[in-house]
Image 1 (cartoon, rainbow, N blue to C red):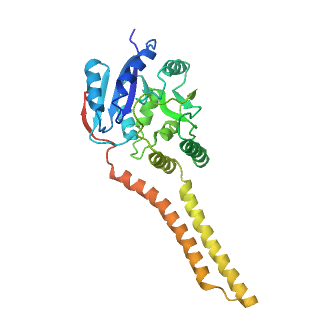
Image 2: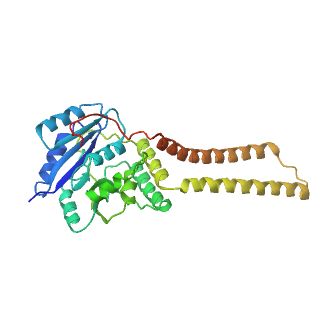
Image 3: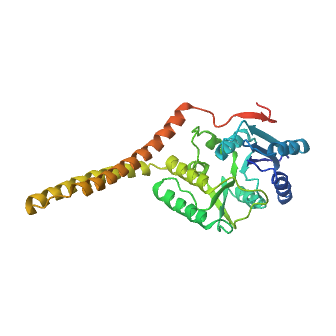
Length: 312
């Protein structure tokens, strides 16, 4: 009997301390999993010894494959690179820091055998996470689910088990500006989520800070909603209507009551109001135009410097 294969995609940026711990823990926790495992480590332009550690692991284990980028292209690029080289009937995406509990793979596979196409994971708590980050994360999910047709579950992780059909569908989306959480939801298929408590990193420091997460959230909103453009249009209309009403009000006030309008304060207020609204609207439109500009360049999502994966 030929055993089905599981491709484990692991994006890695400055994870030299966690990689071997991660590999040993996954092997330990999935020893009963009836799947032949292959690890695909994606070195995303690390500046530490991540690549050297991956090479050592690949020399030690035949089922360890790797891709190393020419520079840091970001986690989204690492994810799509891993999906493109994966060759298993089942595919999972995991972080190397063990915040994704490897023992859950057993339960995830059991759910897959029940007929699900995707089994994702969802954090039900954010213990150990800075309160301000938790607040903005929850706010983001509330906002995106109100303004987007693509539902995104609060606390959902990239850690999920998918069938080959799902991954092939994801690979058909050739956009350069990628937001994987949205893409995973957009393709659909029969999906369920398994809850778990938040975990701390096993070692090392996260490369995500507040501002990088904020930028990532803005990209998600722009990529999966037209609401900001509609807001810009609405703001412009309200500004125009307000200006007309104020003009009419001051005209009638002067004609009826003979009350001269204070010119300087009114002028300053109107300039600040209309100027601010215009800049806000232009900024929103500019964000979408920038995305269009980047798409039209047709640049690759990443450039491979070296790899031990043989090309077909």
